[in-house]
Image (tube, rainbow, N blue to C red; front, side, top):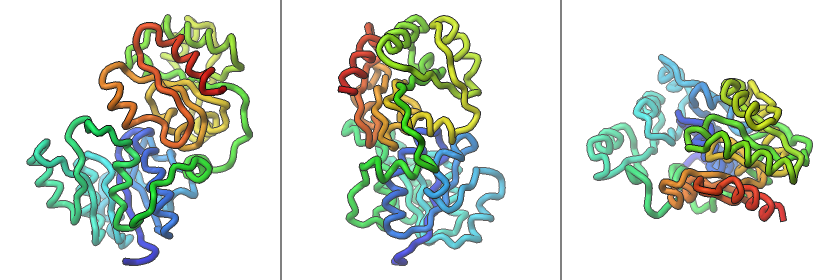
Length: 307
C-alpha cells in the first residue's frame, strides 16, 4: 500500500456527525495521508484548515471533479445513498462503507455493489453501544492498521480549531432549539440558566439562524445571548471555555474533541445507548437524563465535574 495514500471521506450529515470523524482524521494524518472531504453546506467549515487538504460541498457534477484526483481510498462515513454514488464516481481503487446485513437486506446488496469492502453496522441502535467515532474508525483500518484510536484532546483539538484560543474562565451554555426538540420546557431552561449564573460567570451562545428561538428563551430567562454567524468563532468559544452545558448537539462534540469539560443532556428515551454512541469523546464529562428535576441534576453535575 502507498505509504502516503490519498483518501476521500464523504460525510453528508450534521456538525456532530462530522466531528465524530476527528480521531480517524488524526490517525490518517499520522500515516501521512492526503485527505479530502465531501460535506454538506451546514458542516463545510467544521474542521480546521489544517485537518484536511480539500473540502468539497455536495453538488451536481461533483463526481466528475473528484474523479480527476486519483484517490487510493474513498471512505463513505454515512448512510446517505448519494454518498455511495459519489464514492463510486470518484474512481477510487478501494471504496469502503457500511452495510446493514439482514437489517436492510436490499440496501446492503446495493451498497456492496458500490464498494470494494464493507463494514457492518446495525440498522438501528447497536445494543453494544459503541461510540460513533469507534464505528467510523473501522472504515480506515486498511490505512491505519493496528493503530489505537486517538483519544487525547491535545492532539485532536487542532483538527477542530485553527489557532489556540485564549482561555476563558466563563462557563458556556448553548441556547439552541435542540432543547425544544428534546422536550426541555422553557421554564426548566430558565431554572438551569439562573442556577448556573448563581455559581459561575456565564456565556450564553447561540447560532444566528436560531435567533428567534433564543430571543424568546432569553426574554423568559432574563439572560443575554451572544450570536454567531460562522462556525469558526463559535467553535473557539466552546474550545476556550471553562466548561459547557448543552443538549446532545454539535456543541457537545466540539467540546468533546477539544477537551472542554462538558455536561451533556440527553433525552430519556434510549438514554444508555445514545450516551454510549454520542457522549463527548475526549473530554471530561457528565451526562444527564432529561427527566423530572434535570436542571438541578445538570447544575450539580457541573459542580462535580469542575471539582
